Image 1 (cartoon, rainbow, N blue to C red):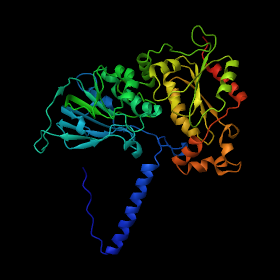
Image 2 (cartoon, one colour):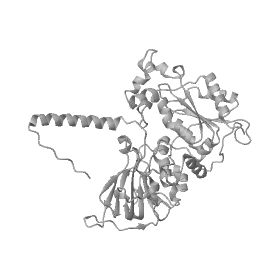
Image 3 (cartoon, one colour):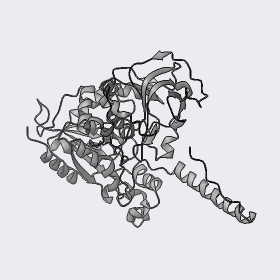
Image 4 (tube, rainbow, N blue to C red):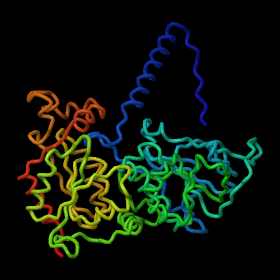
Length: 457
């Protein structure tokens, strides 16, 4: 690790005290902002920064002779390095001993000690607070004093360590921060990889076990609580993030795409429909509309009236409200049966990963200038998933905010000025306190437009 640079002793202690006081105050304010004002989504459009994998790194340059997956190890790289502004990866080959119960991984050969948190939100201190840190400990070298534990379980396949800490449990973050990066980083192993899951929650692991079984032939190890010392010939720690719910095939081993990820989900959850249709599934003479319902904020206040209007427009209507206890395979098949899915902006729209190709996603965007948020989270990913995207921007007349505030209120007339106050202000005013009552005439016209986007049978 870099040593701090030396500096000359100031001549006047009074000036030094003043400078130190100012620096301490600045550090405290910076910490408070980072800890309590974290934005789980990217910035507004005018402030967006493109998240790029290290421009100098090209995994195809480092393919070694050996079994599939060797491209993950690059001897010219440091053991741990940033693969994007959001993700870090550590990779090693040799004598590797994982003592997960003590959050240590002993590695020989290894140049020095490293520390890492295997979760793809390294830019977000709030999320990373809930991710366990692992220490990579060198041993066996002339200058290394660490005594590694003896192996109690030996493995012949590589290990891949990742975490479901952070914002896991929110379906959007499950996919954006964990599952899509995991697929990108491990698909090329062809199942010959052992997953070590840090921060394991049984309900979360059970929910996505069908997906894990498509990527690994072995049971997931609860590495934090396992008292064995697992020994591996290779290990990779941390999945690579490309973009929200997306994959850049030019940067992924084997050139995999989001379409490949969707095919894996179809196999994992036994989804029958590959392509949507204007006439719906076989034995139906109309397309199916799935309305994603919400219990708390951003509710449809006239949900039943919407369902009746959709039925009159010759849609087969279903209403569903997924949560953390939803049977994932069952719900995935329900989504796959839909030709059109709609809902107010929120994690439930992440279920578009189960829609058949050329289906339609209608994102209802709450009032408040949130187009940038809707684009980053669902509009851009929908394109990669071969899903037609439509946006229904809620007018002030359709928003419950007009019942909370007078017509001349700052929140109603200057939403972009509210944005300047930061994510917490945006979330509190326009997401947490808003419900919607759609104009049924406008809603019906939107459904007609969605029907026109569906392919002919």
